[in-house]
View 1 (cartoon, rainbow, N blue to C red):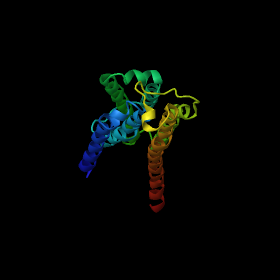
View 2 (view 1 turned 135 degrees about the horizontal axis):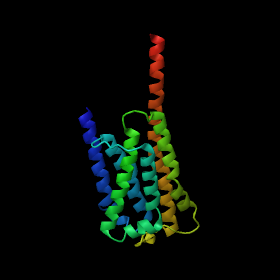
View 3 (view 1 turned 30 degrees about the vertical axis):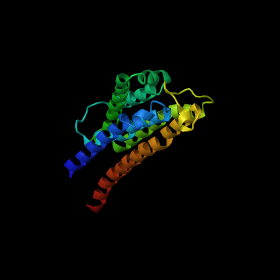
View 4 (view 1 turned 45 degrees about the horizontal axis):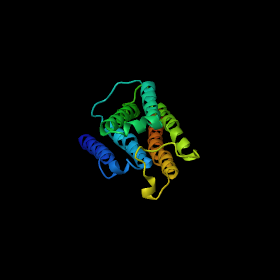
Length: 207
């Protein structure tokens, strides 16, 4: 059963990465910033957690270091100068995606690791605080009065959008779908923490 789960997680990871880099999304992302953000979200909220859940190669990293690496990487690659630079060639774009995937993998590896000194309750807080921190670029994108996040080959008009509308869609996608994943996992971790704390008390009462 564990082998089947691992294989399914790995298959899901490969599928998510393929959808990220290959057409049609890979081609549309050259023209729509919101499509480029969809690529980021597929790596962060689908591919990375599935890869971490497979535990194909467990990593040893302090939770604070993993949190800072992930949030810092996320904020950096959502700075216009960074993603616009990466979008100018296939090689730099693949570098961008690889760095994002690796940082997110480190982050989720801590969240899904076997329980030790870092309790499930602490992990729920770890995930929720990262969700709040990574919402910041989305807030800017949604409420900015002008388009500040556009692709070098931006062509939103072809898709019936203005560049500002494209940016706002990107910002909303960072709020709703991403937070659904982050907070769902945080709730699951919190439930495991509650279950772990109730079990010893139950054993004490029944004994």
